[in-house]
Image (cartoon, rainbow, N blue to C red):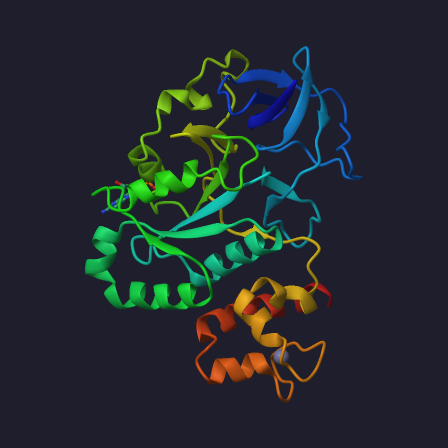
Length: 310
Ligand code: GDP
Ligand code: ZN
């Protein structure tokens, strides 16, 4: 029977036949082959699997996935979540400050895997008072780049209904009510508070189910999915950064939509958009069509990619 992995703790998994929420424990024996793929990556939350007698026998090909940034030394991918219908990046400009480069790296990952993303500016109640100029600029830059920026407050409830509707919206989901979204953002931006404000029944979280075999183990650092309204949310606690595999430096600009769009008119191809004559990206930057904030992130990521090949 087809199931979705909703929690992963070491060698144990919880799976549920989404959109039904009936998590049951199961295990994997030995190495499992991913259907249609040569890799033997560990199974991730969101993976679609076949289960026979409590054993995962088949992992279906992923339509997309997000990986955690890995150290330069290890080439290993750490898959955070698979088969996402959408992502919500929760940010705050103050208390705590989300670095814009972090936002850009997250957006780049979503672009690479074609995951629709909404930026959620939370704690808007205090952001407006403490950092009005910064939030105005933030909205200008990211809306200008083509991303929706929504304002919410878990405290006052502002914008929460809109968020709930988007979580349930089935436009991209294969099954009615089966939409799976990633909730991401640095620690302290209000992810848990928002999830509570959305009316998530926390007793449905697998962490508090009586998964007896997990007792005494650390379960907090693992990713899990849980029902929110009519959809499902994967919480990703304590993320420091995202990594991208299989992206060469000459391709980085492909994942900055506004740079990609401008680059059609560059004189040279390939163009790094850093020093070439008649570069349409640098032209856009000079004309204020491309923001210096986004462009700086692009250059930083590019330099990092350069470093990899030294
Ligand atoms: P998480 O680490 O992203 O899950 O963040 P939490 O949900 O634990 O929230 C961190 C702190 O911010 C808590 O003290 C919350 O009460 C507070 N907080 C969360 N959302 C809001 C908000 O919309 N407005 C204000 N003023 N505080 C908030
Ligand atoms: Zn160029």
